[in-house]
Every structure is written in C-alpha cells, then in structure tokens.
Image (cartoon, rainbow, N blue to C red; front, side, top):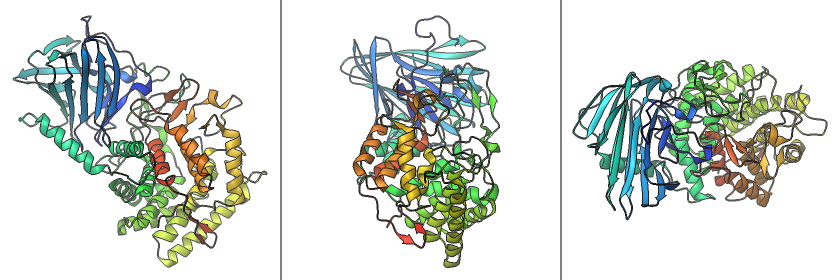
Length: 606
C-alpha cells in the first residue's frame, strides 16, 4: 500500500473476521476494523467497484486511529447499524460513532464519523486514501475551501467536510491522500462527513447533526421492537442487519463482501454482493414468523418482480436492483489471507429448482399475514406453473454442487405448493397445486428414500445432507412422518459434533477438517427439534450457534470450531435470517399441525 513512510501511514494488515463491524444503508456497506480503518466499501452500490479494498489486498483506506496505545472494543446502538468504536488509551477514553446515512440514496454515499472525547482530550490521526476500481485509481483534481476538500475518484465525485483546518494532502502515486491530526477537547466531539456520488454533489455542505438525527429516526422506524421473541436484542440486531443489506428495490444482498475464504487456500471463496432468491425468501419467511413487518413486503416485492419478469427461467441470483449478475473474473489482487480476488458469480449460469418452491413459501407466508396483493398472487401462479414444467429437471441444488435430481429441491417445491394452496390460491388452483405436491413427493419417495428409511440427497447419492431437514420444517411432509423422524436422527448422528452442525461429508476426513460448521444448519436443526417437541434440545442448539459470532454480533457462513474463528463472507444474510426465525419460533411451542388430506403445515401462522 502506498503512502510513504511517515508515521501513521504504514500499511494496516488484515484482522480476523470476528474483529470487523458493518455499516450499511441498504445500497452499500462499509467494513470497519479495530483501528478505526474502513477496509471495504463499494460505491455507489453493492455490486460496484470498491473504493476501499484493503480487506482483499487492494489499496484504499479511511482510518480514524488513536495516537496513543489503546485497547479496542465496540458495539452497535440497539436496533441500528450505528457503530461505536471504543478505545481505552493511556490518555483516556475515545469513541468514534459511525454510520452510513440511512436510508441510503442509490447514487450518493454519505459516511458519518463523529470522534467523541471522554474526560481527557482525544488525540487521533485521520487518514483518507480512497482508491477507485479496487485500488487502481487515486484521488485527483483535489481542491479545498473552508471546512471541505473535494476531488474526483475515477468516475465518482468526492467531498470530505468537517473541521479540516489541519488537513494536508500527500502525494500517493499519481493521486493524493489526505492526512489530519486531531486533538478533540475533553467532553466534546467532532464530525467528519465523507460523500461519494456518481452525480455532481450539491454545493451546500451536509449538516452532520441533521444527518445523524435523520439516520437515528429512520432506524427507529424501520426496526421493530420484537417484544414477543426470545433473545430479543440479538433478534433485533439480526433484523437490522437484514434491513441494512436490503436495497430500495427490495433486493437483499447475500453479504456485503467478496472473496473472503470459507477455507484457507482451498478456493472456496465467492462474490456474495448479489441477491439470491433463496436467501431473500429465507429472510422474508423469518420476518413473517416474527410479524407483518416491512422487510416482508420488500422481499415479496423483489421476488414477485423477478417471477413476473423471468417466469420459468428465473435465475438463482440478481443484483440488488434486479439486474443480471456479471460473469466471474479475477482482479489481480492478493486477496484476504487464504483466499483470492473474485468479482461476479457463476451462479448466473445455473438453474436452481428450489427457488420456485422457496418463492411460494414466501408468498404463502405473506398471504397468512394479509400482505399479499394481486401482483403477488399472480407471481405465485407463475412459480407454480414453473414447477409443473420443470420439477423433473436436474438442478444445481442448494449448495450449487452440480446438476442432479436433488431431493431437497423437489421437496421444497412440494412444500411451497402445499403452503400456497392453503394460503393464496383459488379452490381450483388449490386442488391442482396440492395434487402436484402429492405427485412430486410420491415420485421423490420412490427414488430417494434410503434403505434406512430416511431421505437421501438424490436418487444417485445416498448420503445425508442438512438440507433434508427442511422438507418437514416447511410442510412438504408431516413432522411425524417416519422419513422425517429417521432423517433427523441420522442427521444428528452423522453430521453434528460438539453442538455444531455441518452440511454434508466432503470426504473421509473428520467433519471439522473438511469445512467449518455451517451456522445455517445449526439453526435449522434447532427448528427441527422444536417441531418434534424437543424444546430444551432446540434451545441448546440455538444458544450454541447464536454465540458463534464476532464482537459486532455478525455471522459469517461458517464457524471454525477448533480455532473459534468465522469463515466466509461478512455478514452472511441467511444466517441472520435463520437466527431471527429461531428467535421467533422458539419463544413458544411449535404450533399444532393442521392436516388437509396428505398436507401438513406445521409452520402456518394463525
């Protein structure tokens, strides 16, 4: 990283993922480290190039760091993604309150940072070194006036404002970076505001106090109290994370980052800055379990729009605004240690059958909450028609391993058809959809039941898989079906260890050596146990997996049990979604099953 040898400009090496926090406003996210360094942010939107990319070995950094020796901590203000970095130094306590203004503008990024001094003055060094296009382009055309600096960053317009009287520009390659030493008097604070836009900025400087007040009010309005769930504070935090990852178009990105490795040097790292239909449905379904809240409407709107636009050729993922995911490519960067640099995702070439079933489950959940309009009901018909046309085709499956007749995909479609038949279909359609669900379940049972009586992954693969817990949870088959009970028993015997759950066996190695524990699976197991009436066991699994987060309460996809480290992109939306669903459902006994012929809807809301 460029920047010379002046003290305070040395490179900042990466941290373990548990040490990072996320600022997000729905349109983009910023990852903040313990030295007050923003190491990742794409602008102006999630899928755009990064302007701060040091997390994956690129250049670009925005740091506010104490000048004295310090011990770091931090926390979110409850029900928000307003983060407070907190440093205890030999000179006193320093805090930095930081947020992206919320809700975000798709064109304009506004990053607020407020340095707060305790009983003694706060001495900090501020370094702003933005680099467009993942570090390739430096700040140029730099100019300044009273209380502001402005310039161009690639195609973006940049402005930095606040008490910048001591700021100085340093050459950084062919561009510039800004350095500022601050001494904030005891008991006072100082605001710094960074703006980035793909359009020319208004001449008037932003009012930091007004921006903070508007952001606080918006978070208070958008994140419900969730008084009737277990682990309320963490559940509200999960909701806030999901809201922060959800754009004004309704699309929720799977994670804020790209290329963070699931396993060191094994090539399992991907770009998750896109909206997966499955993940979006998980989030909407989780919110519906807690109540009729706005995130449910946003999920329904996004999924419905995609179904209306693409119908039977629905793809697994889109950008947060509903556009095509770009092809995967390398960036020629070192990557986060153990990984490498990727943007784009090859999921854009896949077919995932279960996306149609998950869509129906989401739309049915919205209907039960009286949140489904005629557009959503027509989307349900489109999804059901697509299942009727394509359920016999092989697909990539939930884990994207290759095309097969995956049992989970087919049974998820059956679950969606059953739920939609009860909740959002006319009587003739309900009869047709229920009958199709029966056909799919019967055909799948004929070819994909293991000799032991449990479900197996596919007709050609007799192995166990965490995804096979979902059919009973979602109502494809009853909870007291012998296949349900035997699948749960076998899963716990084969794919769990020390309170953590795994997806499937990769090979003959011990589970924890092949990959990290999969937190989504741990929460699914808690739901499966709750459905069986094993409430104490369900609570144990919930609490064990709820603790597998970092200082900021964020979850990655996997958890390395031996090293107690998070693995994969940050934060993983579907883990927060299942954590929220568990918090909503484990608060009371599982609702009694309702039977309708061969149907079962153990998750139906009254």
